[in-house]
Length: 290
Image: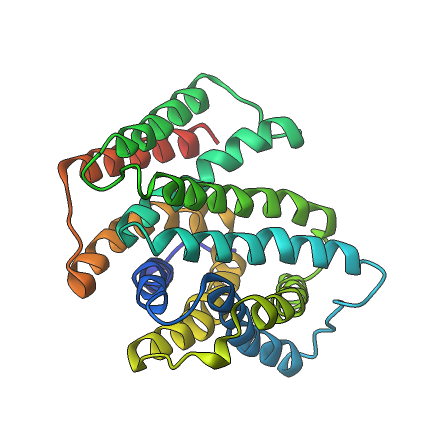
C-alpha cells in the first residue's frame, strides 16, 4: 500500500458516485421489474465483468469447491436478500432515503464486530458515534411527510437490507484467506443460481414489456454499480487499504441525495439533511475510534 495520491481520491469519488447512483436507478427499474427480477438481473449482469477478470488473471473460481456452502450462504445473505429488500423498499419510498439508510452499514458492522471479532470492541468514542448515527435514522423516521403508515415497512426493509450486508461481511471472514475476486465471483454465481428459479416462478419477467429507461437502469445496476464497482473497490483496497476505502461511506449518502434530486426531482426536507449530518458525524467518530 502507498500514500493516497490525487488519482486515488478521484477513484474513491468515482466509486462513491457509482454506488450512490444505484439508488435512483433501482427506483427507475421498479417501474417495469419486480424486486426479485431486479435482484436477479443485478447479479447476472454484475457477474460478467468479475468473471471475465478472473478468467483474464487466471484466478480459479471455487464456487463448487468443498467450501461451496459458504459461498452459497454468503451469496444469499450478502447479495440475494439485500438486493431484494432494497428493490422492494425503494418502490414505496424516495431513493434518497434509501441512500441514507444504507449508509448505516458501517455503524451496524461496528455493533456486530464487537460481538463476533476480537479487535472491534466498544469504547466511549465508538459508542458515542453509534448513538449519534442511529439517532439520525430515528430522526429520519419521524419525517411523516416522507415516511408514513403506507411505506413505514418499506423503509424498515431497506434498513434490514443494510444489516444483511454487515452479516454477509462477518460470514466472509470464514473464507477471508481466499482472493477477493474468487470470493466475489463465487458468491455472484450462487446468487444467480438462487434467484433464477425464484424470478422465473414468482414474477415471470418475460410476460412484461419493460420501458427503455428501466432496461437501461437494470443493465447499469448490474454491469456498473455491481460488477465494475466491485472491481474498482478491489483496486482501491489493494493500493490504499481498507481504512482509505471505507471513507466512501461518507460520500455515498451525499451523492445519493444529489443524484436523486437531479434525475428524479425527489424532495430534500430539513429532516433528511438533519439525519444525514447525524449519520456522517456518527461515522466520523466510529472511524476515529478505530
